[in-house]
Length: 212
Ligand SMILES: *[C@@H]1O[C@H](CO)[C@@H](O)[C@H](O)[C@H]1NC(C)=O
Ligand SMILES: [Cu+2]
Image (cartoon, rainbow, N blue to C red; front, side, top):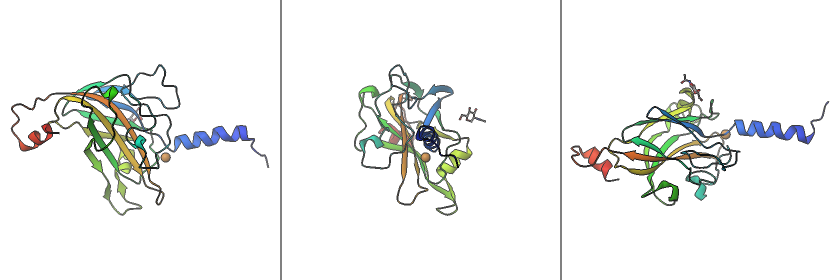
């Protein structure tokens, strides 16, 4: 029997760990591709709409402030400008390894420049979600299973009635394949949402959205 030396074992373990986790790597926002932050690489010289996340590891303590935009969650250098009502496709590691658990997409109004916004407290509003879609809890089709089936992508729509402004867009999947040990995978992107104006709004739904 050949014993593996620690130096040959550790890179293999790291590779296996990294490939079992991850996050949102790239966005397609209204037809334009925006690469995300590249984890494991220095933030120096990286220029992205995505907030910094340093590893593929999940967050396993929901009381951490880094649950908001991952670790470190520091601002990206760029923003993506997008009209309200546009489609955003998030590309996760492909294939995403976890199929048991929900997908949730959130936004937060930065109230100014997102680069100086700290998303603490109840700042988030949900724009879509998918929990158990069919079947039973351990074997059914979950939101994350649908994401994997959809080429490890998740498609969201920026609410059509959202008032113009600067927003964080937060993608989240929660892997629940291990009992009592959920894994949160959040990433945030910085958006500038343009129009439609809230003036002349006719429907209750749009009015409500403009109030956000
Ligand atoms: C599936 O996603 C990958 C990126 O993960 C992309 O390169 C590829 O074009 C996608 N395939 C289709 C059919 O959209
Ligand atoms: Cu994982």
